Image 1 (cartoon, one colour):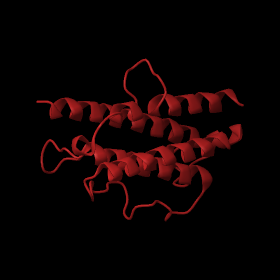
Image 2 (cartoon, rainbow, N blue to C red):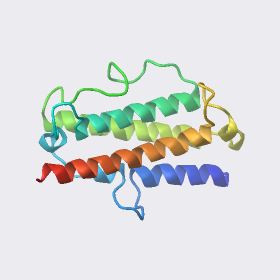
Image 3 (cartoon, rainbow, N blue to C red):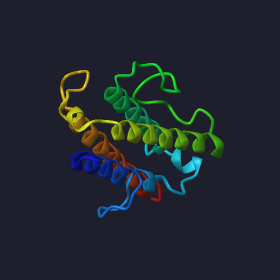
Length: 158
């Protein structure tokens, strides 16, 4: 496999669920949380951890679509970007949304694995960024939200 593709896959994994020097990645930031904790909001008009998790799943889906050229419409939830959560406050519902995050990550990773090295310099459908920049961006997105989740967990304890 091409070195740049290997590096992008490593970056995706490190930001999502592999050990990294900086601390918690996205998957690690939600490990062990209950549905009650995931649904806590610091104030009325703020997002909770659960909503952040589904938001991250949505953007993994979106980036995969940009890589594969797939049309919109196959995300399992209606809407886009931010989804009000919880719909049902149960451990089962929380685990189902975590599995959605897992599945969208696996699917994104598989799409990146199928790219040819020459694909990395192609522009995404909106013609703003290369596919390589888009992949780096989704890894950064995971880390940004992992940090947000860590902060929410600390605020929850006060």
